[in-house]
Image (cartoon, rainbow, N blue to C red; front, side, top):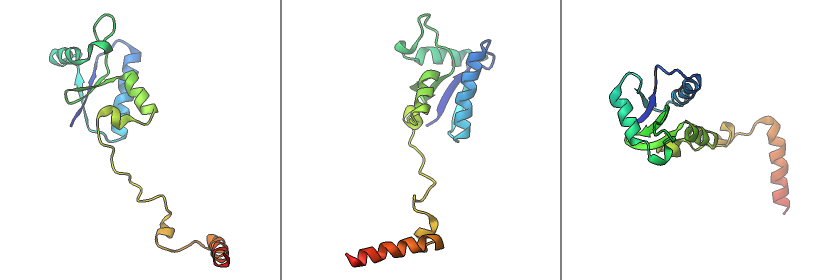
Length: 135
C-alpha cells in the first residue's frame, strides 16, 4: 500500500505550503512510505485528485485544495482530517495502515527482565518479601 499525498509544488498560498510541509514532514519523520503527486505541473494528477475526492469533502466551488491524502485509490482525507488524526494519535487508522510493532520489548526495566534488582531497590524488595512471608 502506498500513501499518495497530492501537493502543489507551485502554490501561491503560504497556508497551503505550510499544510503540505506539515503532512510531508510528519510522514518522513515517522518513516511512512508515501509518494508526492504534484497537481501544479501534472494535469493527470490534478484531474485524478479532483475526481477521487468524495463530494462531501469538496468545497463549495467543487475544487479540492492540496494536500489531499489517499492510500492507493482509497481517500483518507484532507489536511484538517490528517491534523485531527495526528492529534488524536490515530494516524495509522486514518491512513489505513497497520501500526508498526512497538520498538519497546516491555515496560519492565531491563535489569528486572534479567532478574537483577538495582541496589537502591533491593531493600524495598526485601521489605515486600518479608511482608509476604509474615502473612
